Image (cartoon, rainbow, N blue to C red; front, side, top):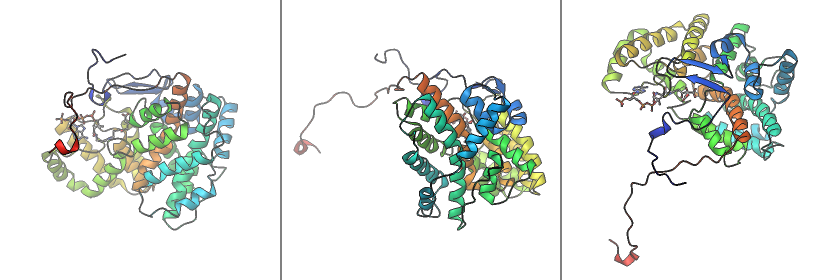
Length: 378
Ligand code: SDX
């Protein structure tokens, strides 16, 4: 079919590219639900393990099903020793998202189901990758810090174990719950750039590891998953609450892109930001770093007053992650460790009802012209 009548839509804004049962995103009213369950309920009342089960199998698990999924995730936490050795070979200042992308590719080299795109194999890989990404992120961080990786703790939840492998300390129940809710809030978000990337890759009948490596590459960008790290660096640049007004005036005058603000879909507000704001307030207070929260609130107020820009999911997750002791350059890998649930669920969905994703380009280059031999040019 040619492209008669099609018009250029920059950034595919508003284009519906797939049917999905995973995520209902109402940008006009600022509402978000995973498979029919409101994000507020899931963040406050479900665990990340329950949300993974919901995204992969379409239903919240029964107690028996949750035990089975939890045990499968625990059993899959180990990563090959060769991968840990490889972490020792990369330059210490390598962007952790670049290391994560390579780690996913290397996990694909050893996964027994790597080239099997059946639903059963994809669901096995979804469990393995969800557990292995967390372990890989933490192990790389320990190795680049000159420390031995912390072996996963089978008695801890996915969220608690991730913080434990990262810091070497078992988190308190309050900290673990805040991090667990963060993972749920970041788990899935319809056809965002990284998820769409994974769908494009598997639409060629390529495999889950190839697609997730692509998704990591897309999430890395500061317009997408990289924004959280950029928000924290902005707060650090401002330094103190008293500096927010001057910073905001200068940034607006310079027409600076304010990280953590704006969204392609949400016009009335990002519901995740509202939830994360409350969590950030509590966590920053508990950790004695309340100034980061105060600065974020004041910056939010000043920017919103000047530009009616809404804070997105990355705005309040930044002070929250910082107060939980997560290194700033691991904010995006941590988001990947959550979004792997949504990426893998979308990959399963794409494989279930696949058609090669292949949009058109509108040619605006030179009209047809004769080829001149080299000695006639110039
Ligand atoms: C995520 O898609 C998803 O679902 C993503 C995500 C998910 O869960 O997967 O929600 C996660 O990626 C959240 C977004 C994180 N990115 C940032 O915080 C980076 C800063 N935000 C912007 O770059 C921007 O708001 C985007 C990229 C998020 C959305 O960009 P759009 O839809 O392409 O909007 P645009 O860049 O065309 O901006 C429209 C107008 C422009 O003004 P004009 O040039 O037309 O006068 O709004 C302005 C922009 O200048 N604008 C901003 C701004 N965001 C938009 N101006 C200053 N600072 C900003 N952050």
